[in-house]
Image 1 (tube, one colour):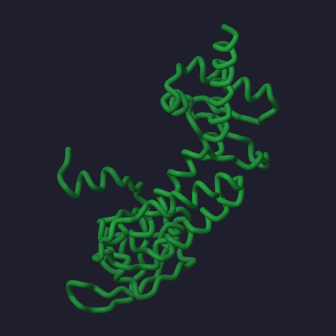
Image 2 (tube, helix red, strand yellow):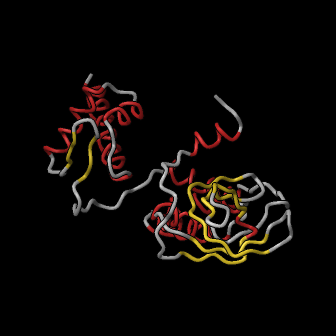
Image 3 (cartoon, helix red, strand yellow):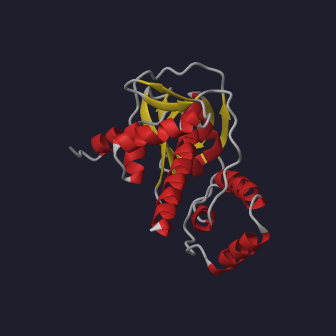
Length: 238
């Protein structure tokens, strides 16, 4: 009986810690998101949030919006489990084969930081797993080096100037685009962007970028972009 009580307390402690990490991952997190992730009731979510607040964590809330950690509060470094570390190694193998050099560089930088907080035994396990997992040997992935620029352009809502070589017309043009979304075709990364030259939404393969640089210009495209709706309209999905 005592063992069961201790186990329940440990499970709740693990969940509360995970909720705290989830709050760090986004600007605002809804109670519904937390309840769905941990398969708990909204009442339990409210109780867990109050436990964190009583422990001195400055968690704010806004009716109809969600919970957030107050700006300026610094939390201790997050430790990861062996299973989470293994998932990152699997992710690394996929990224090695996706074609974009900037993404490989950024992910490797993150992975080095994560590995630095692991204990020696965990590092040995990670090294063993790295040597036992291989990416698929596709040879038709197209190489690019602009994904990092495009990602930042989307999050910061900036205009990018590109020198683009069209595969179909075999011509090179200088364009200014406003990146709105990205997807991978299993051969190349594609950016969906508002093209200022054509005055409409266009798709550009990143491996056809000869140059890409952000600008300080204000975007012209003012509509709210939704990637799911874009694909639904593109493929006539109701």
